[in-house]
Image 1 (cartoon, rainbow, N blue to C red):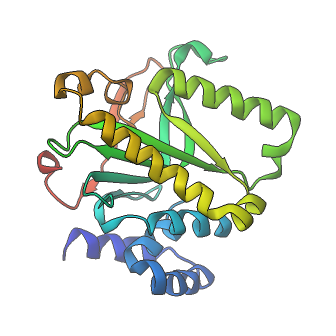
Image 2: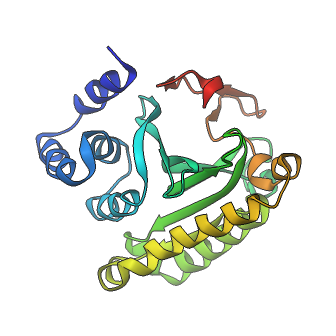
Length: 240
């Protein structure tokens, strides 16, 4: 059994009958892998899946990169329209600076964005040249005064620490201006890949997106010790 077959089996067995029907429906346009990845991951609403699935149609050759269970998480890999490798992260985890922890300055906390597209250099796919991130504002709390202030502050700090700029999508705007959001993602990729073509690999490696802690690590102790999450990779890690 391949890693993708194991992924489909393990993610599908925990789906409700209702979600299984949604997976089948979405697979007609996005394929079984993508539909299972989006509906099988935790913390994902129907409206969010609709947005993410439309964005993912802009990429070619989508395959499984890695997955884990308890909780379910998946990373997909693909190619941009001009052949740059990307990793697709539903529910991408970003380390929160320790200085902002109110209760415990030693324990690492995280922020999450609903989707992140990690773009790699063509010459070596171990070097990240940019990360485009998206947050779907479906919960009413996003539109309260405190929610707006919280999100703006979070996005500012994430940009300061990692050079990741997160856009926000609402149901109403997506319905009327879907192409604007798709264009934003594609133009971001175009600009980052163009800039990277004029930079050396050593300079690219010094960008903030290559220096932040891996989102694949979890805290197990209050003193900040981390251990790797047991991901299963679809291909040998050293070749990706």
